[in-house]
Image 1 (cartoon, helix red, strand yellow):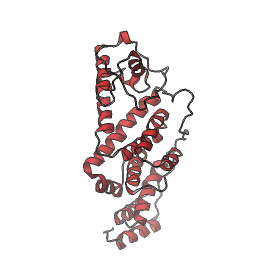
Image 2 (tube, one colour):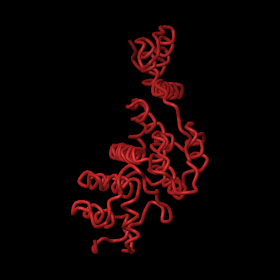
Image 3 (cartoon, helix red, strand yellow):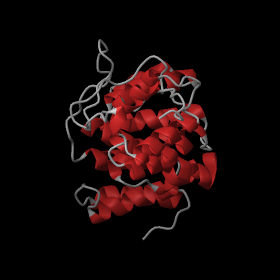
Image 4 (cartoon, rainbow, N blue to C red):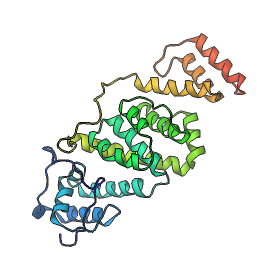
Length: 277
């Protein structure tokens, strides 16, 4: 282990406590693959200048990385993806951290939120936006790019897809590379949140859980999708109005058939220059 460099965590003074689930691998029992994983994490942007045994111990006990170490080949691939989406993405830090918080909120990943909230504040996210997001509300007062990230990430999490208007708005603001990078950060921090939750990784001792647990709601995804289409249609997006007409005509997305409502949205789409059935 003498070649291992020091590790700088997301927060310099805060780590998760050891969990009772994934085992903490003793230093002397690390396999060559596990040692290589630690070396790679330390050699990247997360690395520092302190090579003390205490820092290596913190890696082995960290609620996320103790999971990665159980399958070091997978863990190494994941940490490289994590390095990209945190340090090399085309999405600016304010929006990237916002996407991470949205993902942490979706998964009720307590430590993920705890670790990234200060990074989001440092990157310029309005604390009021984070506060409302923590309550699982659509934050008021978002900037245009923040609203685009919120809609994209939230629809992707809850509806497992994004609407055409949401996709087009994201491409207009971030380009197709940016949209792919946004998918990447959502995907990586979904995996990270799952690992942390499976490992039951706690926030540091003495800290209150930052997120309230949310009851499962099977209709939430459909409501979110309809809310997005309705908001876009009311703002003058004819394609969104047509999509609402289709939904109510077919009785899809969890809503019953409603021909009167369908015709109303089709009329709105037609008035906005969109061809309708």
